[in-house]
Image (cartoon, rainbow, N blue to C red):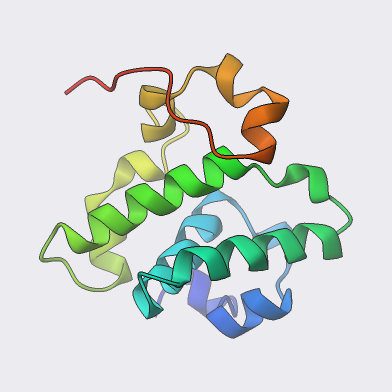
Length: 134
């Protein structure tokens, strides 16, 4: 198993909003997205978005939901899941440290902080305003 699964983070628990908010850090977000995309790459992304929005409402923090960040991560996670021969969460986590890093995070290679800080980026997906370095 893994630390997130050991703490009870499953598709079902996430969809019910039955998770410990104090334990739901950035890595847990990535893991939950991975679970949804692993279950169904086509509908998993929209199921994750719906569950995350419900969770933020349930926790009384609907303003924490950020559409651009959420959908960007879903796209990158999905691409990387299907672009390698790695299988399973442990291999995915090991192969993608830039999805978890506080510095040199993949998000900031594509987006400026100003763009991500906009109300428009919170409410709807915005395309990147940077070109990622190779």
